[in-house]
Image 1 (cartoon, rainbow, N blue to C red):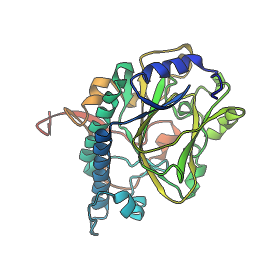
Image 2: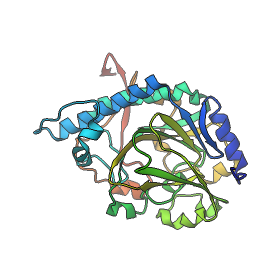
Image 3: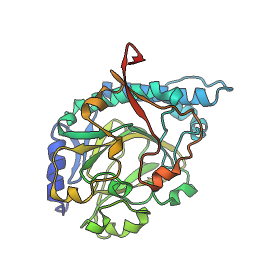
Length: 314
């Protein structure tokens, strides 16, 4: 039996947003729906192509054979890519932006499948293509490591943002996510934190959600839900995640407006990426080194969005 939530306004808002999902599982601050098989398979294929383009550009003096399951056949080469941030983002770079834009257009179709666009004020770009390595790492102790229990608010996201997760390649028995709804959310924690551990006691006495992080699902999460990556075995997991700011605002949203508004676009702009617009980067496929952005609660890299016509900018 699910305990009564301490955040009924947030639960009601998430229920409204998820009303067009056929729910596999429903909690007050988390909803799971099943993605259309054709849409999901299209997304997986495009992510596989993105991985291949990263591999073939970085390991240019090696022969990387394309196949439909690079995630399984090339795990060590994927681990060695230079454009993976400490929190696992496989950042688009100049040689890989075209494949990124193809992924983005597939995500737009899935987003529209559930009519989520009607609830959007603004939405984050780029979407995150996130690799989690189940091997223990010194990065797990970083101040903003995703292996620490945290709210997205503590990383600078607005408190009226909704996180969207789409597991792509994963086995929840080996790498999963722990979710805990707190009893309260003190105002002193409604802001970015220098270290996620500064808020760790918020989960004491909270309600843990039993959630499978399974490929083929879409997961919607309110930022008051505390969560962390839980590494079980030395394997890889890949997923999509991004956030959108809701049209509906409730009182406590005004306390934590966030620090990342520069990365949010109008829905019109965001939904056109991969169609009439293109996300761009001038950076080569080299090692990620911009840890300053993480400490300042900014996105890991800078990108542009340009209009295109017949494949060319204008």
